[in-house]
Amino acid sequence: MDDKLSTVCQLEFARRDFLKGLAAASVAAALPSVAAAAETNVITGYGVTTAQLKDWSVMEKSTGLKMQFSTVAGNDIGALIRDVISSNVGNKADLVFFAGGSHNILGPRGLYAVIDEKRPELTLWERTSDVWKRSSAVVGPDGKQYGVPVTGNADSFGYFPEKVGANADGQQDISWEMLFENERTRGRAAFSRTWNYSAPSTALYLKASGKAKIENPADLTGAEAKMVVDFLIERKKAGQFKTLINSYEEQVQLLSSKEVDIANCWEPATRDANKKLGDGAVRYAYTVEGYTKWGQAAYITSQATKRGNLANIYKTLNYFLGGEYRAYQAKERGYGGPNMDLGVQYAIDNKWPDADVAALKSDLAKIERKYTKPFVANYAPSNADAIEQEWQRFLSA
Image (tube, rainbow, N blue to C red; front, side, top):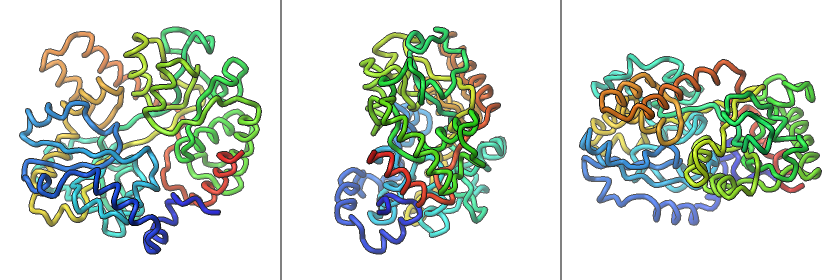
C-alpha cells in the first residue's frame, strides 16, 4: 500500500480530495487571520519551526515589519505539499518555509511564485554566493528560481561523549556505525522515523563501509532502498533503537532526559538539551562518512503576489540574507546560511559579547569543515514512491 504522504502522489491525492476537510480545518485554525495578513507591515509565514527567529521583535525593530508565523506539523514534506495544495495555505500565508524539495512539485504547478531577482528590495542578492542561491533547494527542475535561501546545515547526530567513548570537546570524527551497530549504543539509540531524513544517511554509511553497493545515497533506486531497509530492519530487531523520533520536540526531550545516548537529530536539539544539562553535555557529531546536507528556503505563495504587498515581502526575503537574521540563527540554532560573514560583522558592530562573536566564527568554520565531506540531500528523489513503500516495511517491522 502506498504511503499517503508520497511526494510523487501528492497531486493525485489532492485531486481525490484525500483528507481535504481535515487538513483544511487544521490549517485554517493555525494560520493568522486574513485581517491580520491585510496589514501591510505584517508578513505571514507558514513552515518549519527552525526557520523562525525565537524572537521576531528584532526583525520588527530593524525593518518595521512584523512576522506572524504558523508552524507546519513535523518535518514531513508530503504533509506540507498536501496542505499547500488541498488547504490553500497561500490564501493566508505570504511565505512558505521548508527544506528544499517542495518547490520541485509546487513551483512548476504555479503554487509558488518565481523569484524576481531584479526587485530593488533584494539588495543582498548579488553578493549572495551561488552555493546558496543556485542550490537545488531553491532552483526548480525547470531551472526557475522559486526560493530564497534561509538557513542550512550538514546534519548528523547528537551524542553524549562519555557514553560513546569520544573526546569531550566534540571535535573528534565519529562514525555513523556508532548510531547503527555499535554495542556501546545498542538499545540506547534514537532514530528518526522520517524516510527522507533517515534513509539517505543510512545509505551513506552502508556505501562508505562497503556493506552495500549504492551508487547515489541521495537518490536511491528501489533495489537500493530495499538494501537500506533490510539493514535497518535487522538492526531494529537486534534492539539497536530504543525509539523512533516523531518530532523536534521529541529530539530535545530524549536528549535532555538522557533517555538515549545517541540520536540522529537536528543540531538545535542538542543546544536546547544543553540548556538543561549544561554546555557541552551533548555534542553534535562531526562524522567520518559524511552528512545529510540540507537548505531551508522561503517561497512566495502565488496568492501573495496578488495582495499588493510584494515590496514588503521582498524586503523580508532580503532580511533573511542579511547579518541580523544570520547572526541570531547561528547563535540560537548553530545553523549556517548565506552571507555568514555578515552575521559575524553584525555581532561585532552591535557589540555582542566576545564569546558570542567567537561562537559565530566557530559556526562559520564548522560549516566549512562539514562541507568538505560527502553529503546526501534530496527531499524529492527520483524513486520516492519505491523508497516510501520500502520504508513502511521498516516502520512495521
